[in-house]
Length: 105
Image (cartoon, rainbow, N blue to C red):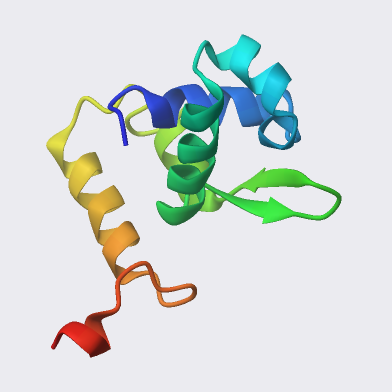
């Protein structure tokens, strides 16, 4: 996940919740390539910033609003604590599990 991707994705989803389901529009809006749009959609879901919602849209989670919102705690990811929180969210997600811990340990 590239450093500036999550704040950029938050702003894009807030402006257009269906942005990641129209890859051509996402490429223009976000200024990234098609494969990067798909990767960013994965990271947004995996880190709990937004979740897929009905009718091919994303809904921003409470965590996403808390970090990146207009009065968010760290909208530009300047604090190491925020990065640790996102890492914890990523590694502790139960469903769907990103890592196969039970197979590794």
